[in-house]
Image (cartoon, rainbow, N blue to C red; front, side, top):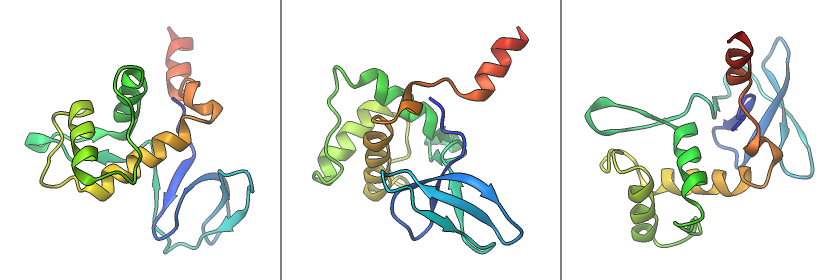
Length: 141
């Protein structure tokens, strides 16, 4: 799964692709079919999907990439619920995928966001690509 250059912007819905950088901040492009451009300033908070983690038990964080990979591998036998489903259904599903997440610190809103990201990303070609870092390591071997 290649999530390089994909970010979430605090306070804005959806996911964005970083297409450039200027003195003031980053130039982003929406990942929907519209491909609208957005210029952020230095105070805008961005989170790259590669760097996002979820609280795990015993101070062990779980990477978003590993969660999405697990969801992808389990999709055939464990149907992905609608992100707008009841919180109990979402929690039950997320616990089956990531049993070692911290139930106290991972909120239903976090689970909804992860599920909606997964459903969106699974429709894109990058979902089946290998991450560039993995390609470089394989070439080195």
